Image 1 (cartoon, rainbow, N blue to C red):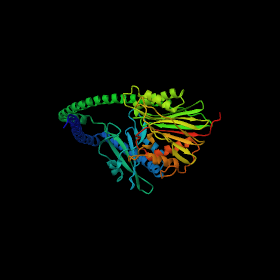
Image 2: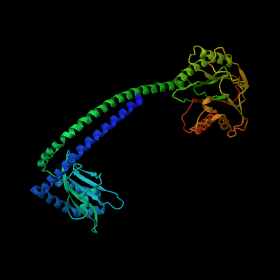
Image 3: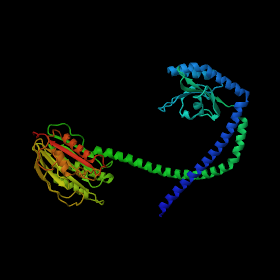
Image 4: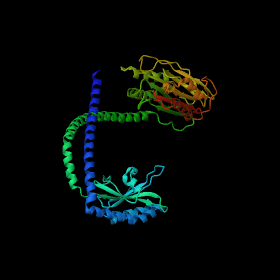
Length: 499
């Protein structure tokens, strides 16, 4: 057994031992105290009830008060006038200081539903209050015996509402037909307990030594547990604080990264463009950008290898370089070349990025583009689709001296260009099945055979195609954890720009 497992077993053993000792202490103290208290309370309370003249007087007063109020109580209970019934019970306590509480418990039928109320005098405020009987009163002798006869005094018991010994006088409550429908009980405190308290103290002294020994041992073990718990909590709080700080910083990084994406394209008559980026973590390595300069739409999409903060840093640098280079350079191959040089120099991490850069002439529809290891864009022409013919090339950041070629293609009015990262095709469901190119094609076409050049549903707006693809991926993944950043860029060439 290694050290880690041995320490774990020891910790568990200590916890078990502490629990057993504490339970033993509690059980011993409870049993001994209960036995002593129960025996002495019954003995002394019985003497209090049978021998004290004052007790007999109080009993007679209580019996008379209940007997006098019973006809009105029965009438109100039969009529179901609970508010008036409660007022009568409150009045009885108000005019009879010997009675500290009155139980009113309806008879429990076959459905087992209990409905009982307790009206009592609050010791602290001296107010008379009502509360629902929260325990199973059917187990109490005052209820069971109260159903049977015309008056019953219970054995003394400890009250749930007062720190005092009580005895309850109960009588049945009957309806107009003489059927018992409830039990009313008056609670009286037992006052003459001084001798009993002394005897209880003497009895407790005899069992005190063992209780003290067990308690001291239990406290020592408990102290050790508390110490270990404090140490563990401090370590946990430190880790949680560091995690919270990291999450806050990642949240800020996410907002910064989102802000680096291009703003929505202003409404115009020539091009309709939308994009989406869903990182696998709070920050990611996918990116896209677009802007119009000198009658041309400059756009790119890319995917930095990896995820998280390192990929996000490379993504930020790549985006900045694209904006800087493309603001002066029209040749997409040169743009990719310059971005590759910046990504390769001093790259000791081995990280790289796939990239596609396009320049669309809005006056002629001529698309010039250069690819660096990225996915082939899909062109939707009318109701047909095709893949843009691209030379694969290698990603940027691998070879500073790599030369990239520029390609061209004509984009007709109402053509749509769908660009995406491999997070789309490699989206994975819970069964580790990939979304794949076939499902991308089927989603674009509305058919399931995966073939190219099929009839396509009409997409009037770029947003429609983006939403359709997003729903298809979400339905396929069906809540499974995202394995990679997923980015899409959709461009619709609305019409040619007239110079």
